[in-house]
Image (tube, rainbow, N blue to C red; front, side, top):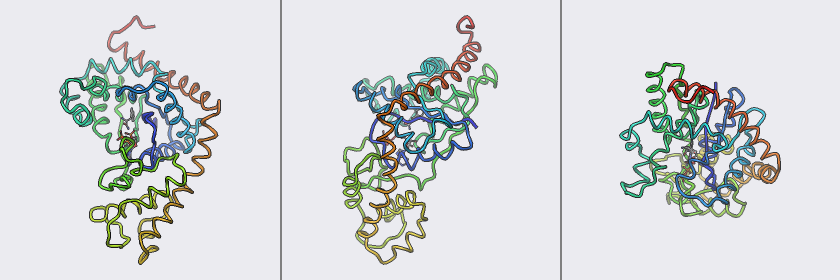
Length: 328
Ligand code: ATP
Ligand code: LTN
């Protein structure tokens, strides 16, 4: 199957992004044709410092490789290096409705009805649909928060296919992460771990050093009844730590509950610090090596060439359907 997904180059890639999305990217690459993108055009929907944006693009690319995405198996590239994304986004804009875009929860949350809401936030889903449809992707691994974006991508593909024929677009399916893979904030376990949360103690970023990992975990909010039990509704803090522990170590939550029965939260936290440190150490050392190597730039160049070769075929086909250009 052809798999496509993307991550925004916004820095602070955290355990939630890793366990919820990126780890799946690695697992899928053995049996599928995977294309992984760094979506810098999406990042500029909110103004970014150009130097920092460029650094973040390379950070994410290096992280992709450091977690195990193998450029020999998967295509890794930067969205703005393939002009087809912007081109198809415009064509899709002309097959979309103001109403359906206005109903997107991300737009409603971020625009809050203001006159000054950026147009890029409004048309964000069309660029995301273009990303996916450009590569005839069949499967799109993403977090649950992206469900609405996958739905509108499908609606657009079906709408265009109804007009021009089923050979225009492949209608993609989302592959959503399980509820347990949702990592919650460490200092407020009722909200999700997020890149944009102000408090550094709310998250563990993949590149955090040992001291920061220790501090964030040891300070993580828990309840006061002292019982180590997985119960996300009544005990969100300890449940979050158990699920991070399980995801990082491969041990089941039941087995952890049994092993820590009768122990205090401090013991569990101390052990979790070690598990997270050990889990991230190999990623961090690979990252340090890749981030400064020429190999990184070479991988992105080859990736952009491979992506362009696929994208050009789709753009030609779609332009023909719409009657655009002179067929060159
Ligand atoms: P923001 O701070 O803007 O909310 P984010 O941390 O949610 O950002 P994204 O770039 O929107 O990060 O997400 C990248 C991928 O990681 C998406 O597929 C998303 O669903 C997933 N993801 C993000 N946060 C979590 C989380 N806490 N648990 C599991 N998966 C997550
Ligand atoms: N909107 C996504 C990022 C994204 C994406 C994509 C994911 C942009 N284009 C195409 C999958 C496929 C996010 O915020 N996580």
